[in-house]
Image 1 (cartoon, rainbow, N blue to C red):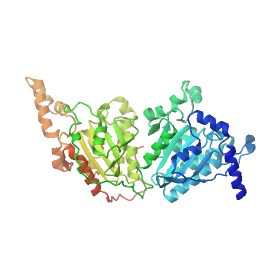
Image 2 (cartoon, rainbow, N blue to C red):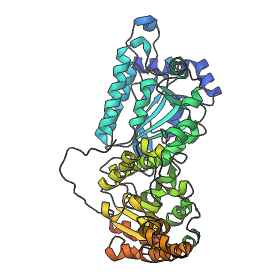
Image 3 (tube, helix red, strand yellow):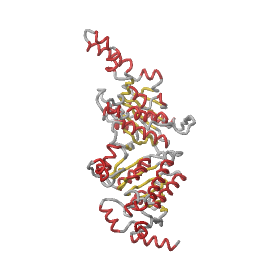
Length: 513
């Protein structure tokens, strides 16, 4: 054993655990850290314990028998982040381009199994050219072994993926199954087939960055939840994200110390414009409700008509789903429904209470939405919120129209407490549109149709375009002044802290995927 340890130390000095000093220097020139530097940056100082440092590949084909490096292109082990146990693997691009071999996969699977057994988060730092082609089906089998464990771990332990270099082919499906993905700008990319294959098959000319870079996946596809300017920022965002989530599905997020004071927030009174058609930034309301500087937004650039992210309320971690009137008036469409549904399900998996802020005029109309499945995609958000058993509180700030009112965590789909501001409008549709339908004949026969329409519009608005009719039915628990919102929600979530909800016995539901 001493002899092997001596060999390991010698190889570390020679750089042979990382493919040689020249290749490490090349990595630094690109602004990238090495695999070991990334782990050192991620973990508490001195806490990392490596597993499998002496592993080498078994292949002898295509001259591979003469090319062996300890660790086989991936560093695996465990340690702590802010004192909390985590497991990590970091692929080493300086060894065979980080390509995944049979033994490389075995190392990753080993710590994934350990993470599951010990109920701790799993973090993957991906930087790999894909499967090691010299090993054929053995490397493909290795990927499948990882995918299977990703699925078994889903909802049991948090799984975080950082894409810090290439991630192509079959390799992309592991991060896709994990809970959150972060990409480094300009040095990372993800795609199933690269630019050369795309050119051959479809005759499209596209760069790696355009096809699968951080900007593409954070704005167009929604594959990545966060982007970072460099490796260090990426790791810092991973650590911050981890602070909002628990160790496993049976744990809760550590609550920060907080002393209750006067929790009234006067600034919430002035955010919403008097003109009901004028937009405002929902993030201002989130900041007014939550603890100072605690909001951590996810998917910021994707489907911006809905906002999701974590925050703290009196020191307690909560998940937020909120319509964003600044974009498309806050309507629900295909992308925003999927975005909200996925985040909702994560929070429900890991006991994170949900706060839903509603200002929604309905679902986005149009042939593009209908032909691409707004029905089934909108149902994803409805399904996710309906099945969630964590504490759920809703605040309707302005509009809640049509089916979107039902979907956005209404009382009817199991929300615990629903509040509305006095200016809230809860109806099937806007007063003007409703009046044009209900009183069409009367308006048409009137001597002054325009005047008659305004009369009917005012009558409809007085009857339905307010929160009081819903409150009379018990659909709204309380109509509150905006400045009271933070205080009410702090009390509500404290009251719901020990909520227990039992669901019908079943294997699992069939969400409309």
